[in-house]
Image (cartoon, rainbow, N blue to C red):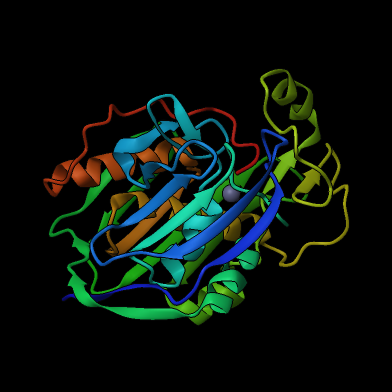
Amino acid sequence: MIVQRKTINANVSITGIGLHSGIYTKVELHPAAAGSGITFVRADLHGLRIPALQASTTALDYATTVGKDDVAVGTVEHLLSAVMACGLTDVDIHIDGPEVPIIDGSALPFMHLIDAAGVRALDATVAPLRITEPIEVVHGEKSIRIVPSNRLILKYRIDFPHPSIGKQSFHFDFEHDNFLRKIAPARTFGFMRDVEKLRAAGLARGGSVENCIVLDDSGIVNGTLRFRDEFVRHKILDLLGDLALIGRPIIGEITATRAGHALHSQFVAKLLEATNGLADHESREAGSIESFA
Ligand SMILES: [Zn+2]
């Protein structure tokens, strides 16, 4: 099975604050040539190009960061999730700062952005990554497993000991319109009890009740949920974004349990190794806290 390579029709841009850095940036998507892949371009640093690939990942604490030569772009996963959902294989993502804007904490604004640009087929195809045998990464109670399938299915299970979350599971049969309705609107979330620690570590500086679901010990601080199980839906959103770092579409049935960015990354590295991809990045320890999923 092969799929058509795709890019966008026109330049489109969006501006906003970074969840962790608190820095305002402008992201501008540009059409790209077939085969060039998904690439971040630091517009403020002489157009330094950072490929959105596993080999470029530099940090996974609470978000996924890609970098090159000490220059990074952080919190790439929600934008990359929309890029994957729209089937884009080639796009230049110009950004004039260190972090993709969080906007409302979901992938919906990026879906609307790509929709506004329009998507067009390029005169080239790509073979999706597919496995012939199950592959699994396990870290204590956390795991991610893929088994062969003729399409992409993402299943996620989470269990947070919190009255507003608890045990949630979601089965997502990948399809663009389904993603738009069921997954893209799901927002990131964070716990009040972690805010001080995160800010001391230089994180969550742009986080507010406007751009994430904020939880205290008893419930949700800001408003109502978009879905009763918004949390697990957001985990699927994150997983799809992190799968973009494979560098091509993927087919298979993936089941993630209590995972997060660090384990997503280990999983992608193992997939690339197993399929003779370019996994030249060391695997990482899975973090124990999953605030700002
Ligand atoms: Zn997220």
